[in-house]
Image (cartoon, rainbow, N blue to C red):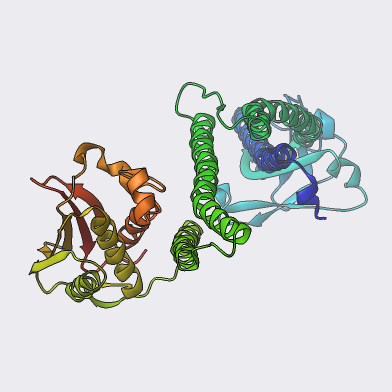
Length: 463
């Protein structure tokens, strides 16, 4: 198992932020040390320049003794040394380096002030002095002994000492800052994730006990509140799905029990009195209830596949008017009903032919069960939709309450539907099919009987 998988999200976030802070602190430390060093160097350079200017002013009005070395008072951390132009004799020097030999020579250097640069005269005699001086500058100077050179240096180690102290301070304080930051980040992330953990425990308890409970939603519209609302919406769907599944199983069991009970009762009666049994009637009952069982099982199987999204939908040209004409011939051959197809117009859509045929048949069978003497079919175009209507001259339905008839195991008249072979699944299958084809199904208001209107998109968008 990888280290990432072993660490909690709290530990990973803390580690990430501590590393990010470490990078920032490291960059800041380097920048701070560099800035301080440059500032010290700039200040020391200005200090050397000021001291050299003062010495030049002094020598312009005073006389240097011949053959003697003048000792100059030292101010601050700056020392100076005045030599002849050849760099072979020291005419004057600050007290700290009064006994030192010539420490440097002048060289031509265009970028430097006055076009001169410092070339240190390294030797065994000057090594002790070199350990104490740095940042040399050189200018020409006029004295009573003639033209000479004045060298200025920083004496001692104020710059290196200051930088060293700063580096030590950074090296000590930055790890401490990282430790404090890590603790604060750990604590802060813990506070931020506490509502998430509370929601997790709550959801775990809900899943184990009662799906009707919900996660408390905090105020505001932050991520935690949105997650709580999303979880509550998911729990709503789970509760609805669970309730729907329980109702579906209960209804399916109830629907299957009725034909099975009829079959068992019929067979038991015939078996108990075989000599007097009306075998043609027994056979008719078995065939009728067997077909009813087959219809119920077929409908349940189709709905189960639909719910699991396992139904393959093909897209071909389908003439809905041809399907209506086929149904009209079928109804005429199996019943005494009159079928009026005068309102059927050529109507073509793109869809799954088997599904659309089943949709039309289910609607026609539903209407035929309630018709008294006549069915009326119609088809036409309405903008991007093909509209199919199937009407009967029966008692009619309450259109305001008719939406529930498209739910599973719902009948307008349960007793009559069972007697006529209805299962309460036909219109729910119609709803699923027409929805897959981008349309809708509904009962519409008519003067007599009932009319179902199906609207199917001419060319449904691919899902």
